[in-house]
Length: 410
Image 1: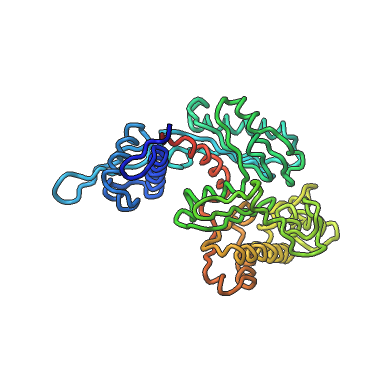
Image 2 (image 1 turned 135 degrees about the vertical axis):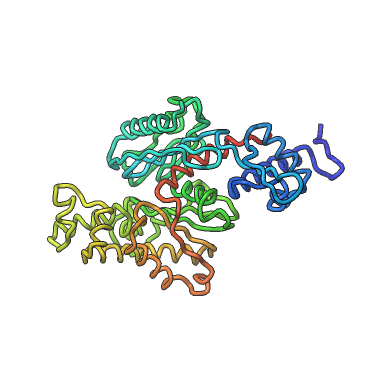
């Protein structure tokens, strides 16, 4: 039996798709504008008043939205201002970085209810990292004063490659022992909740697309600067994953032939010259060779290794070695960004990650190089900004994966 066709030529399948699309559109608009009347919703969405009435009635019945206030504007009946209902659902997001694990709980509006962060070492065993993740989830639940039964799902952000079919973390070069770990199976068994996994740079782009500076942009790039270097790509309001889900490895583009050995096994990648781990190695080598730097008196002088935060602080204090180190790193990162801008011609480039937050020396060097190395005609079309979301972006993006799945359509 074929699909029923109405007097407009739409099949039942077409109608269902259109209805679900319009519901998602209305929810997205309310997430962006926070509160709107039905008339305002009609104007912003370009949907007729009848469609808006039907959709908002259903969303009110499902308790996905609520009347947040009545607005009086002169004579006549007040306008009912509609907004998302935050307590409709709550989702957990974990970001398993190379030097930390961050966790958040967000509500239906995307607001962060609470967060928790633990520093780690990249050489830890997977079992230990998973136990720390469990502990973070326990702390999040305590802070939010809810139980795991009140959570709709868990999203996990990891560096490296994921098998989307099996939910397995295949490879993370900057966490050497993190290989072929069945994350989805482990966490879904532990919590009996849906688990969604994706790459940390792409999830950073998700956060910017939903809540950050990418909300109003059709196409943009997000550069994730931390222990490693990655890129989230947004094309036509969608995060681009690539043919096999391995897009965005800008850190492994070669900028210095026969340069230092990278974790990927090749030489001269941006990561081998300018990532968090590369900078720490360069500091260790400098101290070993008695290069004058105040970093000798910081953590490295106590038997440990100077961190990227130590390098940033030393540069702020005028340490010549640290300033030059960050300026050189900014040049290499800037070349990578300039190449990506020339390739994609994005309207916006967002820079984020633990390496760049509060790091004025690195930021200035990156911007200077991007301007010098990008084709002038393309550079003039591109706005370059730093993220306002900050280091929790990937965790928020991970939680948003669950939020997306928790939205009722049909």
